[in-house]
Picture 1: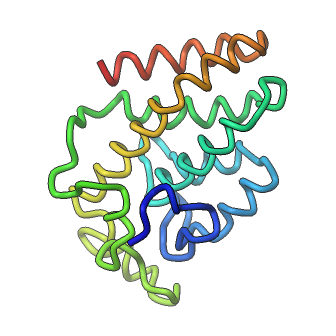
Picture 2: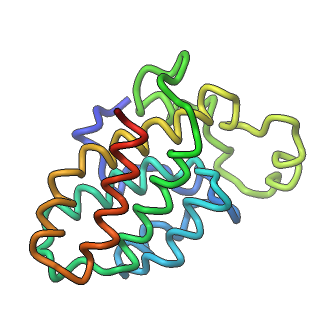
Length: 179
């Protein structure tokens, strides 16, 4: 398994990870096109985070570090807020047997390469990749990645007054969730 430092948008198996509405195949394109609102709908839905969420947050936080404050949009901050809000509703201190984010890409948690059996997979009591430890891992690692972005959120807030209220709310959620 690759170290997180080696992970990038091209070597995440998006086609084997699920979103709120199916497979994560469209995630790289939405990231490339800066389409944060539809992206947010795929990675968070009604307080639930999905298999794609930590990997999406990883890519976005890496890109955020390179952006000037005026390059960041309200929709992007709203995406981070949605993930942080989902995390604030959970009491996740650790993930059980999952020790690293890379483990979430183990074959046992990934969906098959082909999507022709997806309907049946969702009908299972515990679909593949949604066992309790893996499921809580999506929350836990997404939250840790957001927390690592705090210096960048502060930098952007200082340079973009329009985004300041949303970023203050985001920072408050992160502070409350990860005391």
